[in-house]
Image (cartoon, rainbow, N blue to C red):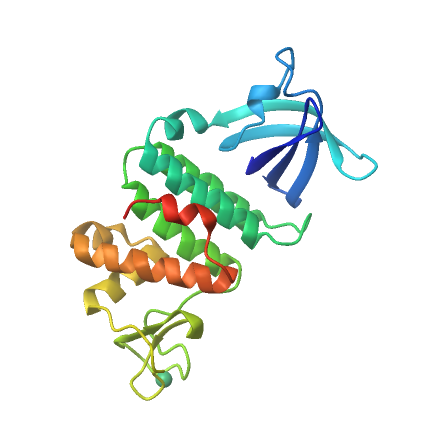
Length: 233
Ligand SMILES: [Zn+2]
């Protein structure tokens, strides 16, 4: 469940990322009445089993069973909640075509929500890793090793989100960032899930990596994510 908004007096339109049908919008009738049998199950951060009936414009939800409500854990922690909100918004934007299957995005999001609800990793690290991987799944995998333009083997010191990753000194464009080399290693580790490197990194390099990841995401989604500004870094 990615997002819901009100429709008429008692209904909601819910936006879902589904395992088999990609992003789907559907109507949940009567859910804002206190007597609704599945109102609370149709909230963001909830993994639900749904049955849909084809409607005139939008599908209609006829049944909903909660699998896991991550909303409970995320709702208690501001950092987890805001980071989780960015993940939902990113998933919605990257699954841009309605009903186009995107199993990998679905599995990635479910895994990231589980990690976000747990306390094994810092919320910011779960978010950063999710953002890089969801870009990769969508076909925008950044390169943090070979030059994103000519392919020359790295390491390289220039980073340019609009060019898709690091650039060698021949290809570098004006305005490219030149972060610490440790930061570029952290970016690569977040993309591949090399947590040993992430855990050993200094806070300033993690922070620098977060800023660059936000720039990559913004570039690909064309405008910055509204929810991103609430995440404290
Ligand atoms: Zn190059």
